[in-house]
Each structure stands twice: as C-alpha cells, then as structure tokens.
Length: 363
Image 1 (cartoon, helix red, strand yellow):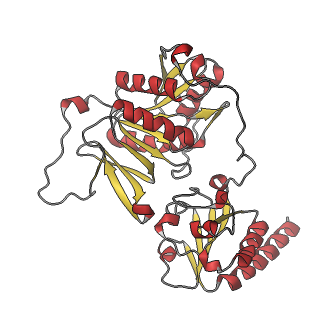
Image 2 (tube, one colour):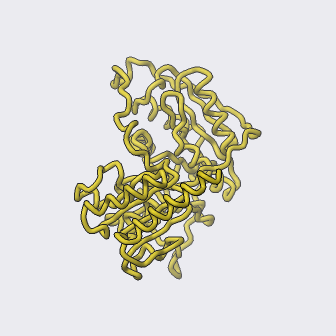
Image 3 (cartoon, one colour):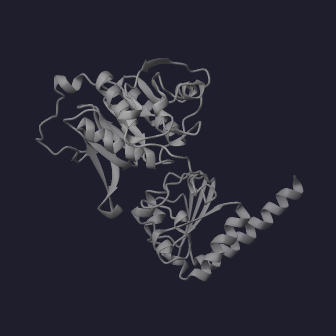
C-alpha cells in the first residue's frame, strides 16, 4: 500500500491530487507511549517533530493517551501539551492498565475512524512496533517503519518518510498516496527533544473503549521487570566512545574502554565488532543496534558505512579517527583525525586525564 517514490518528480509525471475521501483526514497525531507511570521519551521527541509537520500543514497536533482511569493517565495529556500538542485524545479504561494488543488496537482504530487524522506517528519501540503494525493492518493503510527523517510533499499533503533499505546500504523515501492515515514509526533518539513549555495548555477529548475483559484473549499474569535495566543505556548517554573494525583485534579495544572511563562515557561499537564477540550486543550502534544522540561521539577505526551512520549522525559533535583519509565518516564528522587509532587514543586519554585533573584542582 505504500509506494517508494523519488522526492524529485521526473518531468511529465502527473501531479497527485487528493480525492474528497482523503481530504476529510486532517491533523497530526502522536501516540503517547507510557509504562509504569512514565512516558517514553520517544513520544516527546515525536511531539517535537509532529509540531513541525502540523505547522507546515496548518493543522493541529494531537497526542493520543490510553491508560487506566486516574490522575497519572491524565497527567500524560498535560505533558503532551507542554511538549507541543494542541489537544489530546484521552481513552481511560481499566482494560488499558497494561499494554495488550487487542484493546489498544481497538481503541486506536476507533479513534482514527472517528476523528480521521492524516498522519499517525508512533515510537519504534517494542510496544510501538507491535501496535503500529496491527493498527495499520486493521485500517488497511500504509506504514513506514524505523524512519530517520520526516518531511512533507505539500502538493499532495503526502508524508515523506525516509528510512534505510537494502540492508542499510541506501536511504529511501516512502509515500502513502492513496490511503489515510499515513503512519510511521521512529526510533528513540532519532529526533531532537523539544523544549518543555509549562505555560502551554490544550483541550482534552475523551472517548470510551467499549470492550469487556471477556472479549480479550490475552491476560496479564504478572509484571516482570526489564532484564536490560542494568545494561548499558547508549541511547541516553551524553558521551560515547565507539570502536570499529579498524581497531584490528579485541585486545586493542581496551583503548576504547580507557578513554571512555576517563570521560565518564559509554562504550559503543559497530556491528562487525559485536559479531566478532569483542563487546556485547547492547553496545552496537547503527541500523540493527542502538540509535544514539549524545553531545559527543568519538568514532575510532570506524569507516562510516550508512548502517552505522543512521544510528549516530544526529550526535551534537562527532570526532572521527581513521587512518584512511577517504573514509566516508569524514564526510559527516565535525572533526577528523587521520592517523592510527592505536596511537591517537592513548594520547587523547592522557590529555583528557591531565585536563580533567587540572580542572578539578582549579575548581
């Protein structure tokens, strides 16, 4: 149902026009994902991106909050307003206390059919991916997963959803022309977090779920805490030092750990390094790993293939170390050092250690 198209239209191509059925769909929606009383940060990031899309189209931005009755669930609407939403669709029901596909899919599809948004955005989390797929299938519309960029084709009010393809070697832009809503999932930390404005407010539109427990096949038996909670949390690190195949052998990866320890940074790696068993899977950065957005990203011995780039090129500052002056990573790094990482990393570690020790004494 989704069609891959070139952003630049070839000469002579017929201009796409919305029919009356599609014109009835208006507005940008962001699903507000939450668990155990906490909003997932990706939902707030999407509100920032949704705000840009809504402003370009001259429509409202709405959050969609689903959960159990109570002040906590309603507080998520206020957070949506603080981060850019104009209104919030609220569905409260005890059946929505824990995420289950059936009631959440029913609730979301009922809301879409009733209020007809033109774009629906969800986080590409475990929960978001599950919900997005079932909602898109139920509504018989297109869904573009794991997007890295969102834009608008203003002629046809068509969402331009960009994502990696062909094993991550290329980026493609996908449009859903003949179906609404246009749906996309975006990974955490791909989009910037919008500024929080506590002065903002909005209106709440309430709807009922209209289901009973006996109609839901899935039952919640118990809650088991995430086994990953004590694992590395690269998507939320301010500084990351990553190594690639250019580190030559696993013994050399200690140089990455040494620099990271001095900087108080997390350690990242490319897929080949993880596949070779040098570091754990939780530290893989890239299309098939983590998407990160640190203030500083140091890439040592990393060529800069697009599979890795899509996971880290939104970093505020990227420093690349590579002995190949033609390595692709130098095309998008903010600072580049051409040389042997095994020589440069120890020098950087010593320099930072001395600088930080001096700063502590001065402070």
